Length: 438
Image 1 (cartoon, helix red, strand yellow):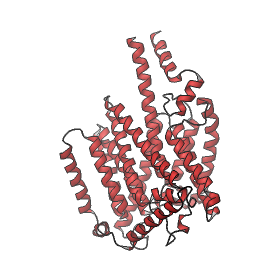
Image 2 (cartoon, helix red, strand yellow):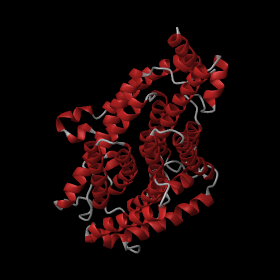
Image 3 (cartoon, one colour):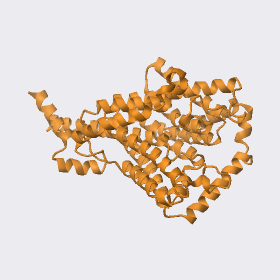
Image 4 (cartoon, one colour):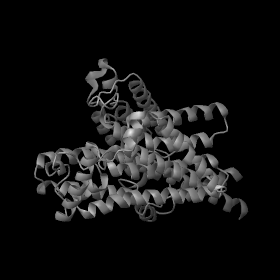
């Protein structure tokens, strides 16, 4: 009788009252409710992520026939998602502010098409961006348990191990396929460019480091430490200056959040770690880090000035998504995610993009504060890793045109899901505690 009543009370806390009340709380992104469901949707999301991060048709020639697999899986996932989501929550999506911002960005991309110099180019870019946003929405709603979140993060970590191993191996054996100067990713898509690869690995380092500190198992700790070292070596192999700056930001934030005492001493140790990384890095990499007037750096400076000029010239709706290269002096991208959005979609869109990042950052910090009052160090370290990962992205993306790509939308999705799961657990625990003591 006691157990039945306890479960009944927790169930009522999860259901959260009437449909109207539930809809209003969901709209503001504060709903603690996490009903079981979306198993088939998550399976589709997981398979899609496999195709996105591993690109098996490039790794294995025998799978060349499956180049459209990701699109087919995405469509089937959406077909499974829609009726399940409406049945579970009576709405098309859970509505945290980050989802609002992402959908606004997609809307602004769509209305920029008629104003674009090359409308066909903008249409293609908008369709690609729409895929990213749709999967982002699916992720936010389908990842409803810690096991699902853990499975998705581990899948991406394994993919990161794969591309990191090939990057280090290519550098060691002198396979510099990018203009004969730098390594190129073993697979295409989001890992083909060494700078993009470095960005991704900068985002993975703090998550792996959080796993190191979260576990008490020595074997697991050694395994996670090996991941961190492998990612660091691969970042060095990319010769990415933006990646190096992002890494410094990650180390600083991670140390600040992870330590409460003797921060000066810990920062000194972190500084020594960065110095060791630089000292052990290849001589050519050190030379690249110390150079700011080579052709690549000068070109980026020119694109920054040009894209900033276009923001001032076209502040309302920009020049159209993916149309900046047509206005570039050298037909290049902006090499800056912030001015990419500002020049192509307008000042309002750039503001929305920045708010998307800052809102996710605020959300994960809020989650950290919740976890600081508990003895759950495992989740706390993961939250710290997510925050440092966001900071790393915000720094490194200042040098890359990645605003419409997958990187940050998966990361923000992790933040929202982790926050939602944590809030649901806390609300269930509070309901149980009130019953026991009241």
